[in-house]
Image (cartoon, rainbow, N blue to C red):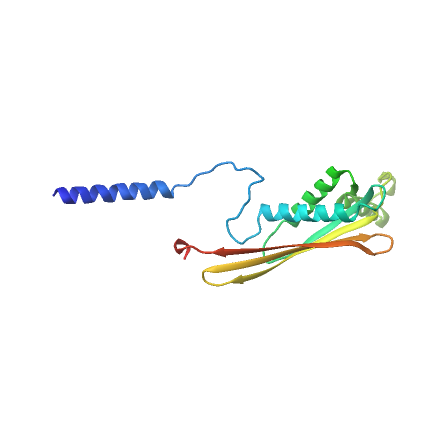
Length: 195
């Protein structure tokens, strides 16, 4: 009888420990802390890509003279994942603005203003009610890029390769004056409990 009670106690304690170990938790972590949970795109990848492109632009465009104006066009997502490539572009733009070496025009606002003028010209809107947009700064360069990936998977392992390529194009000559790429390869192995 004592053995049964002892066995029952051990089983109950084991179940309690298992349940406590399985409970979730939530804590704040430093935004600078590396995020490595699997082989999917993460905030750490975004930061590394933006920082690499920033360093490349600053190091290669030091000789462009006075502060040039850039229109950030698009970083297209050619991966199979939903990745907010606008965040990569925003992070890069903020770093470049903080450096004080380049200026940016907001292409989305220019596009909005252009569509308003197009509406006025079409006769849908009263042309007398359309206000002037003021003086809009022209861009010296267009900055664009693309993010692509290649995925390899087996039952227990996966590997994902990401490549960000960016180009700076002279608006007058259409010449590519700068281009660079950043690559990341991430490997993930499933544990026994993940099968």
